[in-house]
Length: 222
Image (cartoon, rainbow, N blue to C red; front, side, top):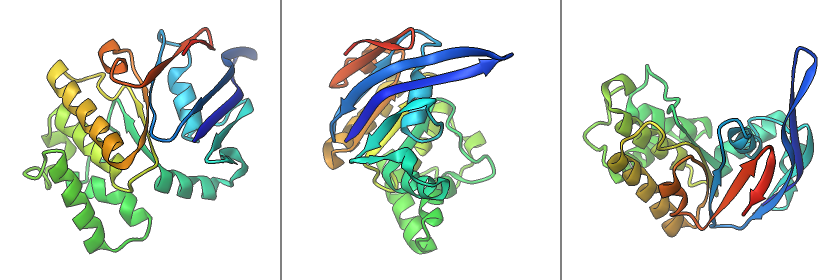
């Protein structure tokens, strides 16, 4: 499903080149559950952002279902992300002025579905993640775990082929973290959704099919 080849990413600081990713090669099959692990600063989040087309590599390629994603225009990439990928971040990135329901509806409305259909889909997902009583609450009125459930529902509403999650349980207690992981695993089982998770949690990584370890910008082992 996903093929990463000779992937490199560098940044420049005061005219000095800093190499973050130094040539990664790996593949991910449809429906696989993958953890990306490594020390802080090794490029895990950078890799996830490139696979999700939120950033571009310095060189190398990312192929999704046989197509190099960076052969698309920015407009095409935006549409592809909306239809094919779901994103879950450590800090939620919910719209603070919108209710939980409105936050989850947003990807559907962007894709030009009707308001009634968007509302129906969002209500169903929020009920699935246990927030049927919190539909009209804004993010500031929700706990951290509830906010992450809203973010997860938003990520899943378009039934993406892959979910990319960056430290999705990083700010949560152990019980809430496992509830979020269970929801991701349920999504994987029911829809064969590919999961690609950046995490420092060995407990979370152990529940994936395999782990990609990044060390000094390279894959240490898989």
